[in-house]
Image (cartoon, rainbow, N blue to C red):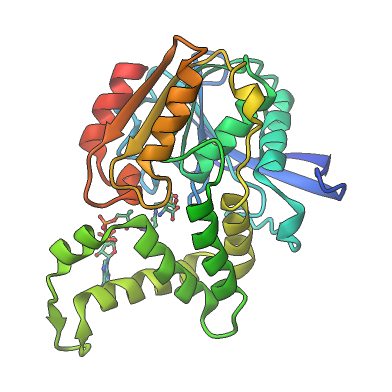
Length: 312
Ligand SMILES: CC(=O)SCCNC(=O)CCNC(=O)[C@H](O)C(C)(C)COP(=O)(O)OP(=O)(O)OC[C@H]1O[C@@H](n2cnc3c(N)ncnc32)[C@H](O)[C@@H]1OP(=O)(O)O
Ligand SMILES: N[C@@H](CCO)C(=O)O
């Protein structure tokens, strides 16, 4: 299977009535397309289509003999247009919502002639886009696995993204500052306190935790453009799958939360599960236990592995 970046080009009119030439890029892993069940993986905020292989950001989960076994499945991952991984950028981020990204991914599937998916899996923003896709096309997938995400952005998350937006609109190291604030939403007080224990970095004359935050701010600024991060933050702020349509989704659903997630609290995900369970049998709730919080979906692979192997 070729895993390099491939492109689909088309005209797209956004919900806000703006016309864009979209260059939708994607990668495929595992079995040849149409020779095996297809799993669509929707990437999170600063992720991209490179989900498996040496530099794959979910390589602990997707690969040969992994929970998402590339010896059994075809894995497809689109880049959210404007994430910059494929050098495609969007100037006016506010023209787009996750509903548009869902439309674009659905167009991508149509273009590839994929009518049914075995599963859709997405973490954080990627899961939100999964909800939006299924609200529009309820019979698209046999299984849906949204991880550390919800079908809508709730007030708390919106508020954190608002702070991100203020920081990103500033002039002084906007990406670094926004990322440092974001890291505190992706982790928890316990995670930082237990890990760093007020250790002091003598060489840098600062707390090791401060150095760690600075490192993450700096490394994001090196790998991400301001434009892309503004778009991704705006998308995270605006997940809003049509509630009435959620009941029509036919996929077997497995909602996975992280017990200490400060971004998409497990209590909200559980509420979503309980609401949908009223009308649906094939729906299940799983919880990852982790002091790390939201980022557990990128860290707690032993738990994720077990949950996902049992689902697929
Ligand atoms: C799915 C997606 O959306 S994006 C793709 C995955 N996400 C990312 O890569 C985003 C950035 N990374 C992260 O958020 C985190 O690294 C995670 C979630 C992947 C893992 O978190 P943790 O297990 O806590 O690892 P931590 O952040 O401490 O270390 C990661 C790397 O930073 C380095 N690092 C951490 N602190 C410092 C520091 N103070 N100075 C220099 N390097 C540092 C580590 O050495 C490690 O490097 P390595 O990957 O080459 O081994
Ligand atoms: N830390 C991850 C998850 C955000 O939801 C990222 O940077 O994409």
